[in-house]
Image (cartoon, rainbow, N blue to C red; front, side, top):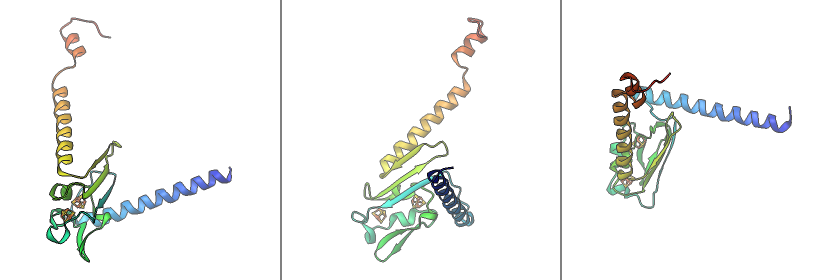
Length: 154
Ligand code: SF4
Ligand code: SF4
């Protein structure tokens, strides 16, 4: 086995261990709150230059996990408590002030930074769900034709 191969393996092990430790820590912190995680990973950032801070604090009130807090005249984040729900972005009075990127189990990445983004995202998800429900209710064209004997599908 080459030196380079050893290095890659060790790096991967370290990365996986860090990810596992982070996941365990999050589970421990979120368990007492009874909050389920829907996303496998994510990132949150607040642009302190455009945040209205002391006059606002709406995001802190909206956060269901207390991941946001007021500290030394600005909004602080405990990333380990953030479940990337988007409630803070929905309540923020400044577009692009809070930026969230989150990854679903399906590996789909979603990112948003203003209420309008979340509303559009929810609308897309609901449309997809509605389409899937309708598809489940009605037979596909091949099944329909097979059922009524118009074509022979083996
Ligand atoms: S995304 Fe949700 S959990 Fe994370 S800081 Fe915003 S409101 Fe809190
Ligand atoms: S809601 Fe937006 S503007 Fe208000 S304190 Fe939070 S990040 Fe700043």
